[in-house]
Length: 314
Image (cartoon, rainbow, N blue to C red; front, side, top):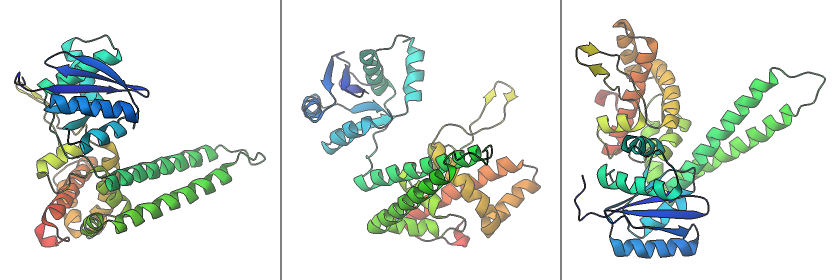
């Protein structure tokens, strides 16, 4: 439990308004999600001096709120809605309104005390937006290609035009990604360290830079759990279940999966590691996930030590 002197705040973000709740006082209020409303919110929170402010990731509506509060030096934390929804169910909170959601977030902030991490810079946020847009375009193009398999030759359904438009948009986004990384010295250096690893290509580099800004600042166990490639125990009494990975950042795992497929063939160290696991009787998928985890740990170590890949260090 949090100390009574701690002030915890929960903010439920909607398109038009922000519902705010405070623990332990129980105070609640609402402000419009506008520049003026954010200024009033900032001033009121500054007067409260909260230990942490919890906001759910809500499809982008939270970004301006988080950026405003972080710029003011307030300890804002963005959390996964799954965590807070599970927390609400554990409390027996079945009813749902914006104000009730804010109260649950405030209690979550007070009792769970999620760690306050530095918010990504504007450049990293731009990188995240471009990376996500690239992923959308790739998925859309793949969906159109799948639909085209059932095309009737005598009908013009626009598949060629859509494919050309998406290919052009994808090329433009990738150029912007590359230009953004090259223009920022810190990102350019981190990209060089990551690209030095055999098997890590430009897509994996962009994804890691955008979606895992914590690289180099966490232990190997923490970074694996953060991304979702750390195996968790499933034991109870004398029963020993199969270890499995879950949670974390799916988009990073997807990029690491493709990188691990390449690294298991082209990276001598990862190839030997993969073959050793297969020889030991591990299923191919398990061995590949282990390669993903090892690649991520190597990336973390290079960013921590600010150095290029050296096969002798792995």
